Amino acid sequence: MISYQALTLRVCGIARHVGRFVAEERNTFDDSKIEVKGVHDLVSYVDKTAEIRIINELQLLLPEAGFIAEEGTNSTRGERYNWVIDPLDGTTNYIHRLPIYSVSIALIDGNEPVLGVVYEVGHNECFYAWKGGGAFLDEQLIRVSDRSEIGNALLATGFPYSDFSRMDAYVEMFKWAMTNARGVRRLGSAAADLAYVACGRFDAFWEYDLKPWDVAAGAIIVTEAGGKVTDYKGGSDYLFGREIVATNSIIELPL
Image (tube, rainbow, N blue to C red; front, top):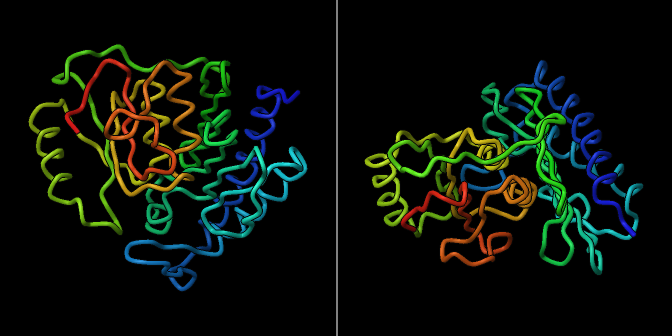
């Protein structure tokens, strides 16, 4: 019988350890070390090395689990359990020395996240949750906000960076948010956005064209903090459906 609580706390240690490596490498990082995966999609040796280190340690924790990892350093799939990993969510921020970037690690059972850890490196904050166990920030229980009026709500979003086919609808939603909400923020790390919804800093977050490793860990943290996570239609296909809405369960967005 797997103890999700014990496993989560071990993963927190891995995320912090790898996060320290990421932070230390920032001191000597330069643009010559950047690779371009696609339009607006950057990667470096830091991402790849961090991912390898995470995978090596996770293999010891749960040998039967496979991996869904952004940089593809291990693509072995497990029959039931798979780790979903983004070793550096917010690479562009990292490259430009903006202090919001995260290590994101989740474990899914089938398509259901059962634990998640988001270590926000720049601010040394570790958000985590496991199924049925609540959500935490550095050992303190966290909850989503209780704001009910959109005029009092602070929203977060992410700009499309590779799929621009839905830009018109996105711009309309952005205009609605700017007009009706207290404010809109774009951090550049979906993992951090979701963690901030979980602890009440944001009241809602929406974005499309995201991958499983962007959202898996943050989604269970939001859910365990009392929030609601869906796709744009209100369904449950946010992990692989490439669109996500996370709210405090009260605020509703017209998507």
